[in-house]
Each structure stands twice: as C-alpha cells, then as structure tokens.
Amino acid sequence: GAGELDGSDYEEIRYEGYGPAGVAVIVECLSDNRNRTVAEVRHAFSKAGGNLGQSGSVAYLFASIGVLVYSPDHDEDTVMEAALEAGAEDVLVDDDGSIEVLTSAEDYVAVKQAMIEAGLEPEDSELTMRASINSELDLEDAQKVLRLVDLLEGSDDLQDVYFNANIPEEAY
Figure (cartoon, one colour):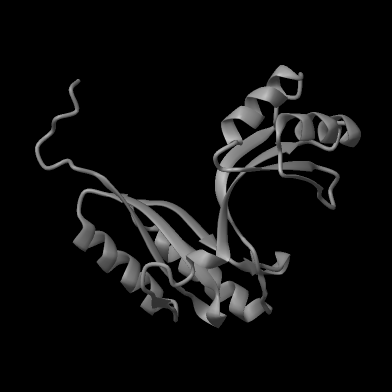
C-alpha cells in the first residue's frame, strides 16, 4: 500500500512531432521505461510517414484548456450567464446545439464547481490540449493521420494524443 514497488518509477513524458501532411502531434505518455516508450513513439511516427521532433517543436500551436460540455437541451443564455459569472473564458455553441464552456487550465476546477453549484452539471468535462490553428485534410491524408493515432494507441504507455487537423467524417 505504500507504493514502493521496486523498478516502478513512472514518469510523465511528452513527445512532439509532425505527422503525415505536416500535422502537428503531441503525445503524452506515462512510462516506467523512457527508452522503450521513445522507441515505440518514434516507430509509430516513421511507420505512418511522420517525424518525431524536438521538445517545443509543436507545443506552441496548442493551449491547455478546460472544456465543459452541455447537451442541446440546456438553455444557451442560462449556461452563458452562469459560465461568465464563474470565470469561464468563452462559450461556444456547436452545430448540433451542444454548448462548450472553455476555461483556462488553472480555472477549470473552480469554474466546473461553480457551474455545478448553479445547477448546471456538465454532460462531459475534461482538461485537454486544443490547437490554435487546424489543418484541413483531404480524405487520403486524414486516413494517414488516423493510422498514426492508431499506431500510437497501440502503446500501453500512451495517455493522450493531440493533433491540429480537422478529420472529415468519411475518413472514420
């Protein structure tokens, strides 16, 4: 129960690189063997037609944010008013009518708690990385990017993969 297993020092590792069609990719891992993990990530990038980059090579294209998602049955004005009072940075209404409340990573917990206290329990919420600029891909390049994501997800050490591309629906 003390968490003192021999050889089990896990560390968070972030890799950055460019995937097919120049798509920026951030890979977050949790590993007890940095050498094994970097080999797996490098292999996935090269097999999918991308390149593993240096630390900081694509991070400037992403921002760490909190996202609270509300279903279309919530009143947009009510959610917007509560979100702004809670300190949210932005409120977006998606094409399907769902509402996203965006916060800074630092304010995420406080905004989420304030929204719940206002009677607005989010349908989904998370801390994530969102790209400031997205690439539009054709079907072929989108499928290559999805192949890279699949290869990366084959690693037991993978926690999250973020990329700056809009994938067309038909690519899935």
